[in-house]
Structure formats: structure tokens, C-alpha cells
Image 1 (cartoon, rainbow, N blue to C red):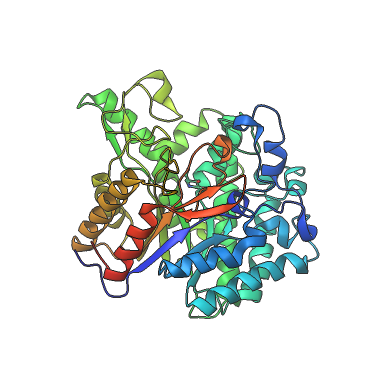
Image 2 (cartoon, protein in one colour):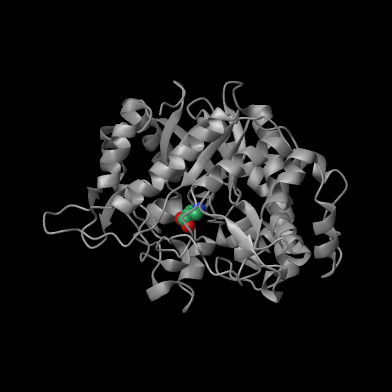
Length: 444
Ligand code: IFM
């Protein structure tokens, strides 16, 4: 099973989840520092202060990445390292860290793919309202522009946002993520400002980045299936699709929010923060879509499925350690649907992977065969989508190494590489070696 010759095999991480060095070299406080220090928010009271100490160990990490034959590395910039207060004066030491990282990647011939926002908003901006304040969208574009100017010619692939659905809804409606609000109307407002900031950052990109560089956004999409043929379940599935997928895809690719969801969200108050001209900004053409795929949604019409997430339907497929159903074949459905409904543009899987309760055995190895099976199944589905005409250009496994899994702290291991947090020792799992062979063969 061969992938196209130019297929990009990569791994992904994000700043707060791996860097540690939370106070080093002038880094400012982020909303995740504040959130993780708030009692009860993160399992075991853990936080990203040390994480994988990648800030100090990046050379070792990239050496390991190179030894596995990884072709592209998706990382994120920490906004509070670049602008400790969110705006104003660039923190040159923060910039220097990413310069060193990018130079080292170049030495190994690993192509960088950079995400601008993977949830670590500077706390000073949160103090002014964060994503509920329209100004944050403009400040994001300024931050983006500073990075395009610095690294525009070294980074071929730029991703404005990672999973704005999570930032908006887990951050502002369920309160599971920073800044921890539980305010549904606010979450919709945050989603609009996140999308607006994306559009503004794309405009800045076109103005300053080299023509050879590409820009896009990463969405966490899930194909939605109704639990039954009943009209009520079908309607619930449509709503869930609106909530999870269409609320982001429609404005980006059709220049309008979906009418059914506008009506639905308007129950909670007017969406009067959507200003004339915003949708044109949001729909500015991009070069690719990043898709993060983890599982499907099966929806039943229960009161719980009215707005936030699934529930009511017991899982039928095997589960990962996150309790997420393992449904590789649905990845093909998702990719084909995006092409059919939104257009024939390049797509990258910017994240896919699984947490399993990995253990080091007596020989010092980690046999994570379930992860290999998981990835094999998903790679096959990706290949099927390519055969069906989807322009899938690459695949980034989440994650290169075990890391801080947000509200789950360090209890969930997604890595191809095991991290012993007590010693910061890295041990490639069986899946890392298997992935190395997949890359070498460009297929399965
Ligand atoms: O760890 C996260 C990542 O930060 C965003 N996408 C999903 C991953 C697994 O939950």
C-alpha cells in the first residue's frame, strides 16, 4: 500500500504540552499556567512548568526525530514567549529559541510546520477579556505578522489556529480548558473572534509572507452519525454536525455561518458581535485545511445532545485510554465529505493518534502494539481517501512524545516516544520504530 511520492510524514506537538521552562527567558504567563494552578482543574494538580523540558532538550529531541526519518515537524509557537504581555515589545530570547529549533530542523532536513495558536493565550490578554474581546483578534494578527517576518522564508507551512472548537467551547462553555468559563453564549462569541483572528492572520500572511509559503487552519472534525433512522436522531446528528463541523467549515469555505446554527445559538442572545465584513475576512482563501481526527460522533436525541456533545449512545467500538472509540474507517468518510461539501483543496491530517496506558517492560521496552494497530488502520483509511480523489498531502502523528494532556495532566500517553517524567529520559516505543519503517517504505 503505497502513498504518493511527495506525501509528507510528520509528527506533531504543541508548546505548552512539551516545552516546560515556563518562566525561562522572559516568557509571560499564559492562560494555561493560570488554569493549571487553579485547584481542581487539572488531574493531580499537574501543570506545564516542566512538561518534557523540550525548551532545554530540543537538540536531543530533534536528533531522535531525525533518527526515525521524520520528514516534517509540526510544533506551535508560544505566544507568551514572543510577546510576554500579548502585544508590544518582542521578547528576543523567546524568538531565539524558535530560531535555534528551526535551524536545527534545517540541519536534519526536517520541514517545519508551525501553529501560531495552540491555546496558550497570554494571561494579560485574558485579563482584558481574551477571546471575548474583539481586540484580541487584531493582536493575534500582529503576533502572527511578527513571526511571518522572522521565519516566513524558513517555514513552508503555517497554521493559524489549532482546533478553535476546543478553544471556544471547552474553554468557554464546559470550562474543561483554560480560561475555564462556563458560559454558552460567551463560547459562541469566542468562536467568532477566533475565526476572525484567523482571517486577519491570513490577510497579514498574504501581505508579508513569501509566495512559496502556505497558510491554513486546523480544525478538529468528527463525522457525525445518527444513532437511528428516527427523525429526532437525524435532527440531533445534524445539530451536532453544525456544532462540531459546519460552524467552522461554513464560514471558512462558504463565507456564512450555517443558518440553522445561527438560529439555534440566537436563542441565548443576539450574535451582534458579528460585524459587517467579518465573514469576508474569515473566508479569505487559504492554501490547505488541517484536519485533526480522533473519533466519530454517534448522536441520539437526548436532552444532553441538544448542544454539547454526544452522550446517550454507549460506545460500540474499542476504546483508547481517553475513552474515545477507535473508528479508523470513519476517517475516509470525513475526508470525502469535506471534499464533497467544501471543495477540492489540499488537506493535511495535522493530528491523529491515540493514548494507551503504555508501560516500560523488564527489557526496558514499550510494546505499544495497540497504537500500531490504531495507526495502521487510520493510514489505510487515509490511503483510501486519496484513491477516492481527496488531495491528502500529509499526515502528522499526534504526538511525537508523551506530554501534558491538558486537564488530564500527564496521565494520558499519546507519544510515539515514551517520556519518563522523573528523569526526562526518552524511549522510542515500538510504534516509533514501526512508523520509521512506514516512512522508509512510504507505505504499509
Ligand atoms: O493533546 C491534544 C492536542 O493538544 C490537540 N488535539 C487533541 C490532542 C489529544 O487530545
